[in-house]
Every structure is written in structure tokens, then in C-alpha cells.
Length: 171
Image (cartoon, rainbow, N blue to C red; front, side, top):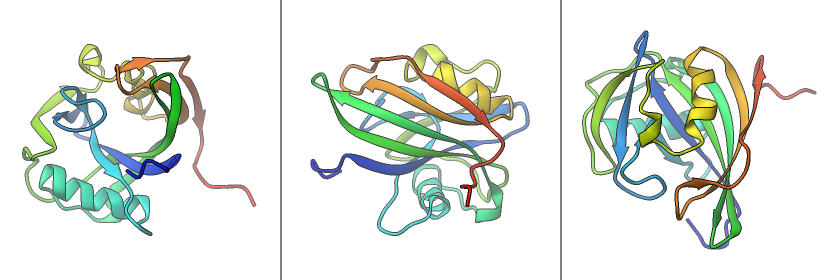
């Protein structure tokens, strides 16, 4: 990420395996060593769906097509470091409802593991995940704002979660 960027977009994808999902431990960047879904930053003019396809192939070794992605959230991560906001990361959250291949370990995501959706390892995830992730695991669509210190993996403010019917913009 360029030091001058203040707004970044990306994706985070969760495999929808009925009552289960697959998480992996991050090996780089924000949340290293913690359980997370798969994804990353958009590149160039990619759509969120194109970013998801690229990231899932790179990080999990699976291929998908856009119709197998179901958007379930938009999270605005207001990231602080050294006591000041350095960038806001808008993350499009998707369920992956079908994929080709087996989920495998990669350089960025280690130890892919199935978890029950209602029993995720929140104590080994980013602190605010326990406040917004249960909504999408129950099948709700959300828009949320998370305030966190990415250097120390701590929350710096209240997490705001709003359920929505869709992500379409009004005319």
C-alpha cells in the first residue's frame, strides 16, 4: 500500500459450507497469526468480484465464477497506527457458495480449518470480528464501521453494525 493512500478497497470471502465455514491463519500484514477469511486489496480497475476470484485462487488454491459469490457485507475498517487514522479499508464481504478444487494452504494463509459458523474462534481473531461476523454467519446483510489500531490489534472505538436489505445504491 502506498503511504499516501487514505482509502483502500478490498474483499474478504468466507466459504459457505452449510453450518460451517473455512478460516485460515494469516501469515502477513494486518492480523498476522489470527484466523480470518480470504481476500485482499483490489488491484487497478478490478471489481470486488474479480478481486475475490484472484485472491481465492492465490490464497486458497480454488477457482470460482462470479455467480458463486454472494455479497453479505460492507465493512469500513478505520485503521489507526501511532494514535492517528492512517487509512480506511472498505471491505466487500462475500460468501463463496460453490468452488472448484480443494482449499489448500498458501504463503499468505496457513492451516485452513473448518469451523461451525456459530462457534468461531473469536478469541483468536481481530477483536471487532466478534461484533460483526455473527450477523453474516446468521445470513444477514450488513454495513459496519470498525475502529481499530492495526499495530496493536485492538479496538479504538465502538463497532457500528447496521443490517440492510441490499447493497444497491438509490437513484
